[in-house]
Length: 161
Image (tube, rainbow, N blue to C red):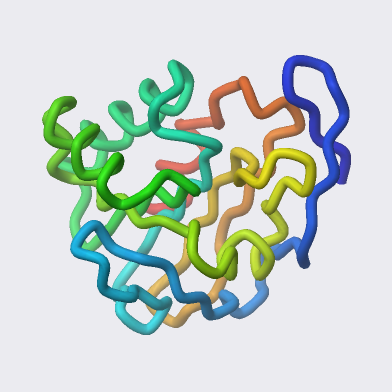
């Protein structure tokens, strides 16, 4: 898939997932510096892959999901970026984010490569949304072609109902 950043083409590494796939495992780093894997997550999950929580679009996206997540039962929302865990914790505290967990792929880039969102040229993750059900099946996928755009919130929330 071709993605762009402000119109400039980028190359994604890894294997893209599709609806119906079993969610690939991964290990990322939590804000407490401990590893977090797919097996550490339960129930319905939303994985938001973003370039950086310190950008305007990512900020809006995480705030929107923070608000919506509080209305959903048995749903965990994770924002995954290359931001260091320290920066993620600082941003969440300053933004009052309590319903979205931030985790970092900075160490092994395993999430980025296993979900096909690692941007070769930038060393960041592309914007994408993955909804995983209780049985680790992928029930919704959205890879944004232009990473400065927001995801389809309504479609994501419908996939969770």
